[in-house]
Length: 512
Image (cartoon, rainbow, N blue to C red):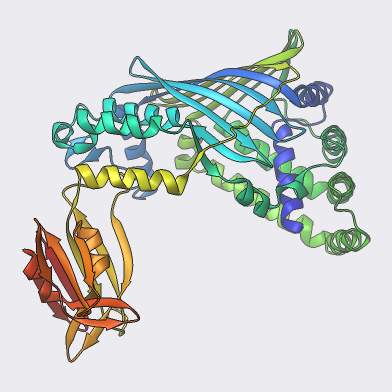
């Protein structure tokens, strides 16, 4: 319960990140509540645009490393090739229906990159029904990867971007319209309903506003300005850092005010979240009683943090980084809703390194969100994609390793392919038998990985493998109904087998 309440406290406090208790700042908070009320059931449309100058970024990182003597380890190259250079821009356009009363939404979105637009389908979220995406989402991501990789030497040699693979992938994704990312059962296990207010969000919003009025009474940031129909916020990195210093100073000078306002707020939250049992309230009261009893420690801690932070931001290297950041935002009333925009910038040596711009329109609306009724699970889709990968990028060998921990009854199994595929490196675990110094591997598991067909003759208790219509007997030993064969026996199937042993660590490689 403590974690839930702490998380909720932190999240709602974000509403007033740049606010204090001036008349303008309180008016902004009250408009923020109107915005939250509008969002109860609404339509949202917007755009997010990210621009990055990778040449400027490289210089920015280099200057940070030089100033701080810290290696950030950032690389813009892959296999010796420069991955990203110059200026790049990505734009995301979205339309969303949202119902905060039921915690449901659907969001259709597309991405524009290098002048080309990609349809990324729709995502669906429901507290009770689960999380879904359309198969268009995966196809759109694939198309983006395909276009992004065309400038690299390995593009023409990769099965992932061949016309045949793309055609088969599209066919596989077209078989099912929806993909279930999180099931209804998994959502139920998360027990999210405990985090929902019993009477909707309005009472909680009121509690947030009251909290800010009480806890920050006498504190002003000066960052909120009134504009026609709304408010604007403007700050740079140094101003935000100084705001934290000033806030810590205010807390150190007004401990009782902060403790009292926080206790009132937390009790309001507990009542609204149906968590306010007598036992829970008694525990909460005890925590705040302890805070009051150790008020001097509270003040000293806040003062120490203030002095430490004030010293840090005076450092020339820190100042260089803080001076790079800036933030501007506007929120205005518009009809029966709101429009807002925000810009986040990083500028270094006169060059704009990163710029993130958001624009959104929120309109009150009685939305109806229809969740998908049928969908393929992630496991089912994975099975289909694995079959597709095996067709175009088959396993060409396996590496078995064991003995790393002093035991010899389990081994790591690594499937080797011509190139990394959809799922990256493919690892698994398997049983192993070591007898008279000889290692025996599970026949069916190894053959399944290699794409071989295993059979069983019950009369003679003999496992075998069929290759080109010919039967190859694979005698070994049986354990718990499974056939194990010696490592070297795979040479009968035309594989090259190598074996190494060093300091107890053993490795067998079976390759075509």
